[in-house]
Image (cartoon, rainbow, N blue to C red):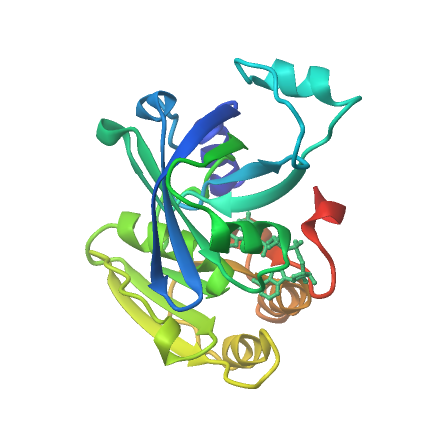
Length: 265
Ligand SMILES: Cc1cc2nc3c(=O)[nH]c(=O)nc-3n(C[C@H](O)[C@H](O)[C@H](O)COP(=O)(O)OP(=O)(O)OC[C@H]3O[C@@H](n4cnc5c(N)ncnc54)[C@H](O)[C@@H]3O)c2cc1C
């Protein structure tokens, strides 16, 4: 069994339904909204660290939800009302305040989650299930490579905050333009490269940059999140082209061009 699999099993805990309320909404960049959610249950939220994500539940307007709303209640409601699910990352968790932050890329007011995140206000209810098991950061290899577009920025930010002092990290992040860059604090020895898409297609710059990267010497791990076709190319490159162990290559399709996430969940 690989090291990563052993660690993943160690950190796996069952998810549950959380019923939370929006406490704050702010634009951290022109196209990224940070929502702070609170709820009594978040003081005991079982944080998995790093890139843990949750599934937000979106019911049709007018659906009356049973209270208290639990996973069992959601299951019982299925014949009448099915939620549409959207995956989002826990950017940070403050148990002492019963708060979590989630960051939403604003890619279109008519899209389900993105449009909702543009309109949401303090006091609105947010229901979600999770968290997923997180990416295991230990045991450490000599270096870590983080690759992503803006949807992966919350996970990359969380991973950078967790990696220990002195650990060598290369992060390559594609965003729409310079105005979409954000501070990414880290105690690690991190070099962050921002790629500005401007009018190029989503993921082209990230893919081209990643394919031409010279990896540092020693053992390493690659983590990435981006559009599906980009992720497929990167996975092929690192596993088949460069011969990295699959267990050390954690690349996830975060969204699919031309398709809603309904088809994937
Ligand atoms: C594990 C995981 C963690 C994720 N974490 C985050 C996160 O923390 N923050 C975040 O913003 N996203 C995150 N995503 C991505 C997010 O779930 C998708 O972007 C999702 O499709 C957004 O839902 P929607 O309802 O806005 O759009 P959908 O209804 O799913 O899609 C509508 C249309 O928009 C397009 N589209 C979807 N996303 C984008 C995009 N970013 N840019 C341009 N076009 C897009 C689709 O191709 C489709 O044509 C994560 C995904 C995964 C799998």
